Length: 613
Image (cartoon, rainbow, N blue to C red; front, top):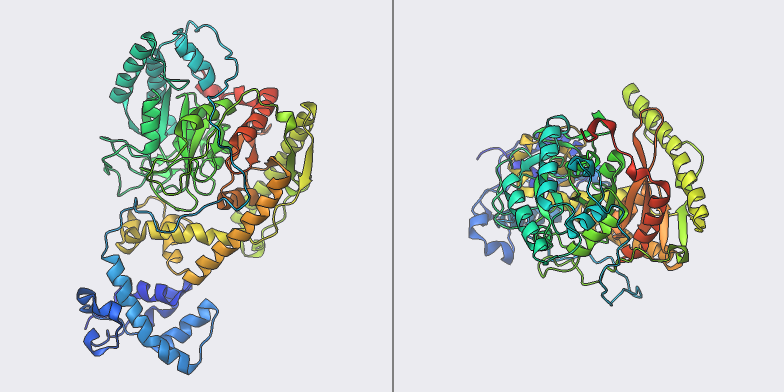
């Protein structure tokens, strides 16, 4: 019999429900032994007996000694009688895993369990109203079309509606800028020039004929390359998927096509939605091109900041809209979980993935959300809740709070593992904490600005539950989404291979016990209840973009709007602030954020290296 191979070994690890990365190294020697006799000589259940093909494979030897050693790492203990009873059951479990693995599970297959962020007693809007837009600023086109590179979607929409500017002119201008700046910023995976030009010509014909489809008609945009577009690559930013073609248009792409928007390109993302490093390099921050744009919606955020499209679509599971919007000084909206269907988008975590717009202004985000929201009959998490945008909403009627700890004038504490950090890691941590303290000054100034607008905010504390440990929900689901990718060894193709990158993370995540995953979701329910209590008293909560707020709201499904909130004097890079709203109450959230944004004007500043010629 051959020695136990690594796949079987990992199956045993998984069946034991272990969480430590040390397990493979510690117990690999134990696994180097002969396989057990054929399954016909082993006890088996009715379930395994119906799988003759699975039963024909040798079953790895699992001994009480192996289980005892593994139990120490898992933090549990068993007596000798318990160990003896466990042995045969674990062998049968391996057969069951093999049977399940033979079922081809595409990334698009959703689990039977669907996350619902709504709790009993939450009241939702039911009436649908057409959007009530602000008065557009520009009334005439500039002599140089490139002077509109940084114009907001609302302003461009009015110029298109009144035929002061053509979609074709905007499309050509943005395509030229994309091609000119891509070698520096590396924000495009695939250019869609021909598709874009055809859409722009059609938009101009329709608008001239009086067939105006709405505020996005003729507006050029970019799609994060985890959204499928029929006839073009959908690479997910990852080596090994460079030539992947998914023969469908994602629901969001279909809806923007129907609204008459013009798709320019597919923007970069960190490989499989992690960071800003993809198979073509690192996407850059226009404010500081020697720095990455952060991720994973790296290209979508970079292109907006560089004035290369009117709006873009990103995605977030745990910061992938928030982080690049913060880094690049954009306005990014992560809608309520279930607001926007994810059909045709790469799945990372079924209970946490969101799609949302990254734009230059708050109202731009509202215009995009108005088009892409609502169920499609395919994404089981998407719900039918109206989104009603009213630019004239009285934001002064809102009850506003702010996270006390985020606005406190003190340096954040050192991490718990400070003593184990290398000198380089300590230096970076010290730098990050000092920058966070300085950024707090921008947050405190925001309270004064809001006070001048007639908005008084109340300090609150976020729920005191363990938040970071709940990230095992994301880790477990993402490891399942890319299970075969890990088991096949294709994870070695990914560009990033460090400790915190997907290959190692998913290997580790295979050892998370199912019991711990379920219990993490039970704690998640307590977190949802605690946040529901906060939003019974308040409509909007102001917070720092990073920290507990980011993890909490991604777990509870609450919407968040990230906007620029000042510029650091040392390097001129933008800081940000986050407005968090109640579930499916983006209208109120955006109304307050827009009032603040218009009062401060930070979104009107742009990186000098990318100004129009």
